[in-house]
Length: 435
Ligand code: DLL
Image 1: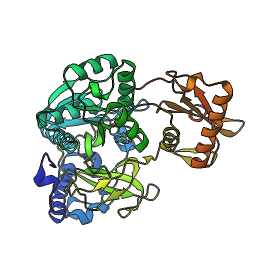
Image 2 (image 1 turned 45 degrees about the horizontal axis):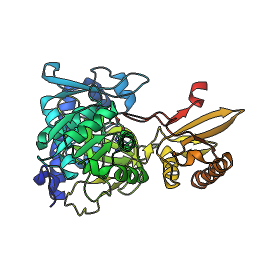
Image 3 (image 1 turned 180 degrees about the vertical axis):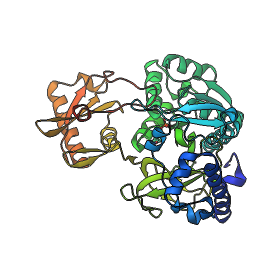
């Protein structure tokens, strides 16, 4: 039977949901205007006052916020609640430039944890489950978000954080974990380690996984489901908007329901800022509706995706977003062709390789180069040099067919590509280092 964490909200009549969004938007805009001089100035520059925002139909009038605004306003320029009412911060994993610091009041944390609780129940969780959280704890939102959601549902929570994979498996077995929460790349690594330790899916009690924080393909989903004997669910979110649980997959697995009572989603043309109709690919933009400490209006995520309002068989009425097709800043232009790493992953997994790969892009004599390193499986490793060369040729042809440009393939020894315990770094673009 389908279970919801907050059925009255998750299955709310769409017209009623719009009405709720409208009322909350008006209040949220007023809150931001009253408390965030940085955003008030942006509104004034457009000649706007809160009176111009009477409901959802006026949303398009508001100015966008971008990551650059967040950097400029660092650390507290967008804070909308007195510091004395804030109880926590989280921060992005950005390695360059200023990090984004998000602030939370207790109300904001409750709201965020409820979003994660919805995700856990959509993945079949209930109070009898044992949830193993191996997202990182600390500044990253993954650990705290799923931990809080698991508490709300009433599950037994194993706050493992990431790393120490042998111990993860020991706890998974001994404490009969039923739901695993981590990045998809770490789930793949845990699956690999489980098998290396001589165990299989029959030796553990896992039934579901809630994986997100990085792009992953349907092929990778199949691989993880097989190696761990589970159903794997996607979960999406970003620090700026609260963390994991902004949207989550239900049993239908045809997109992630966005928690529309808390966030309005729009899709825009990333070049012009024009709002696009449902069904078109563009940049996802979020407006928070009931945040106290760190409310963002029309925040540009840089994630490219599609929205769908088709009726979902799970009964939830909230709009669904596709898996992000990439980030506008993830897309590489190689020899004039747009390339997303996920396209390469799809080919590699379809050709029977593991998701252990690295993509290296460089520029030599004014020409872009694309090198792809993929691990051989232990069985393939005993192949002759000629056989390996033939495999490289076949893979290069398959990637060329997908991308329209020819890569140089390097099949490398099993276990020679570093495993990820958090967000995997799969692309090294050396051209950026020369610039
Ligand atoms: O990654 C929050 C999160 C934690 C989501 C745990 C899911 C699970 P940030 O570190 O701020 O927050 O990174 C946000 O990660 O803009 C996307 O580009 C990417 N991302 C997040 N979830 C997914 C996903 C967390 N399911 C950025 N699929 C976002 C693809 C994702 N990309």
